[in-house]
Amino acid sequence: MKTLRRLLPALAALTLAACAGVTPVATIQSPASGWIPAEAGVRAVGLGLPGGARLAGGVTFAGGIELVLAPDSPLHSLSDFKITSGAEFVSVSDAGDLVRGVLVRDATGRLTGVAGLMYRRLTLTDGTPIAEKVDGDAEGLAITPDGLLVSFERNHRIWNYSDVREPTSAPTPVRHPDFEFPLNDGMEGISTGIRGGWRVSAENGGVWDCTARACTVVVPAPETPASDGEYRTTGMDRDEANGGYFIVQRSFSPPLDARAQVRRMAADGSLGPVLVELKLPGTTDNFEGIAAVRNGATTRLYILSDDNNNAPQRTLLLAFDVRD
Image 1: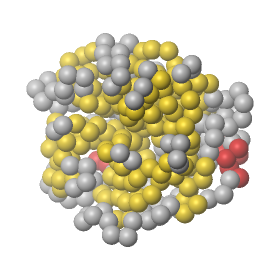
Image 2: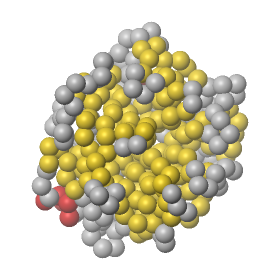
Image 3: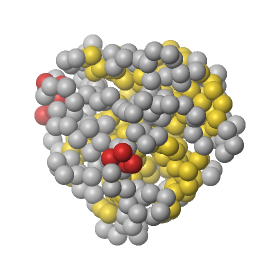
């Protein structure tokens, strides 16, 4: 995963939310066995200065927050995000931690915060906690009927951790594309499949539909990988209303041009028009996670940024409603 570590502190200063107050997150007093409570603060964020965000027709902004974290917090570097049930969510970090929490919304449904944050270390197949970066670089999450799938890069693989609330200490390897991914550009996007199984999207291009038996190429990986300055897919979730998927993509051109966009992906891997575009002088960062939840005639989208545990960057969670 190419990061935005060269981003200067001005990125944070150029958003209106930087001066807003911080509210402590309500911590969970009696976490489930194996989970550790995590402290954080929340700061409300908007879409920033005019000229930054562009929303397609039928898309509305539904609130946003920044997670304000201590330097040693285990909640840095969150790389994907999925809704598990109601307001409950699960996330994963590229440092090898699984995170759970609850969304807080106001009476109108706008995102205003999170609560009950807790985390636990992901494990190797022998049950021991992951200790090395090469083993713990988790990038994608998919909640399937068969369990919680986590995709990793560097040591490229997909493991099934079974239950979200009580993940197994002995994950099971599952099928992943038979492709030689670059060390730091792997299976960023993963989602439940339309007809069962799971879909995988590589950051540098390439889409596959996988089952327990095999992975089938949907879109071949390009011979020439995309550059940092081109949009690359970093997260994916099902689009229940249209029989396809939502994807989040990001690009970065030095020194400050960090961008993100959300699009639909059809069953054949083709991409639809841009639904959400984020760039300076508006609110933007290194967006990698996405979750989609059907709600009547609309779909609520959440997109999450990975701060890379890098002070100029931020952990942002933004919400959007998309009409069918």
